[in-house]
Image: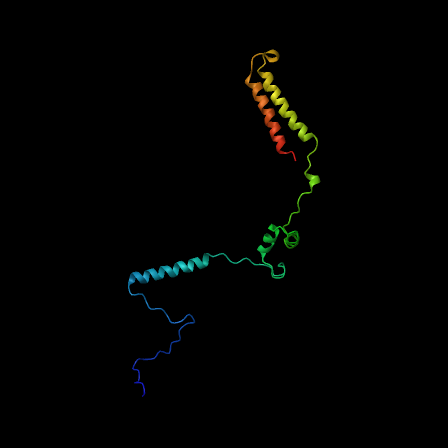
Length: 155
């Protein structure tokens, strides 16, 4: 049995790769909304930052840039050494010989603290200076503060 002939006209128009075209909006409000959506999509595409260019020669055989960070945080010394070799921003740790403070830093610290306490104690004795003075009290506190600040530099 043969199918009856179709009376509908055939179109020679080819649809784009995305598939058939969409149906037009039914109302003017829907048309305005669709137009606004298209505009905002176009603006958001234009405002996107461009991808960062990565030099393929700078990359190590398939390693991602974040792999060096992960390896540097791992507890495995071999991974840390490999990560430091891959990364150009590796800063070696400061040797312990450079971290030792000179002998005069703790001497200065204890000296400032002792002199500051002595000034405050003597301030309240009436024998050498007479009545207590706020100036001497502030001088003692300044010496104690200098001792504390010197203590922050001691290693």
